[in-house]
Length: 76
Ligand SMILES: [Zn+2]
Ligand SMILES: [Zn+2]
Image (cartoon, rainbow, N blue to C red; front, top):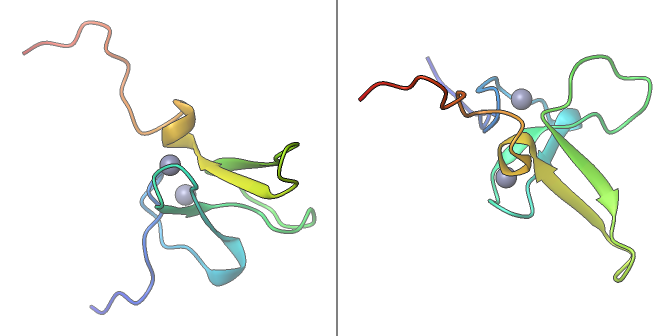
């Protein structure tokens, strides 16, 4: 098995080039729809920085939405 694609940090699935984004916080790749007609779930978010007018990409892990199990009832 050869893996030439980098897995998404959030969901662990391979990322196709047309869905790839890099988190500006952790520098890891994640899924993001780059066109509105694409189906599927995004693994992060993007918005325009008002100050620099640049796109900021942040994965769901850094947003605190995914990748971490709820700590409730965690046993050691
Ligand atoms: Zn993903
Ligand atoms: Zn991140």
